Length: 171
Image (cartoon, rainbow, N blue to C red):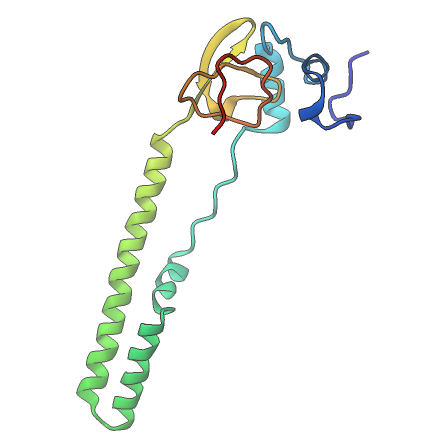
């Protein structure tokens, strides 16, 4: 009978023996996961990635340009100019506020698009052992139980448990 994957452990995973943890995760500390098991885990657990924050709607992005104090001061000045029947100043101030909001909207919209393009271009990679072979895969495709090889300067692609380390220093 196979051990149940979702059964709660007696102790938290970080304080359990590496061999016991490997058995619970159905992995091998020498060869890593099998490709079939990794595929099954990805299908059941999903990809190793944080959910992306939703981008604000265009209307929200535009309206957010009018939330600063100085904008409200200018709108107040335009209202006072209107009450004093100084129509030229009132219209000029409203036009300046609107143009400022429009320019801010365009800049933020372009910045959001640039960030989205950069996120797509920067794919984090991880080196994992699958079926006993070292493979370089996108970090989002790593699965619970993957045996990850880390070297100096590498980013840790997911929550991980060190099972072997040489010359390890934490900062």
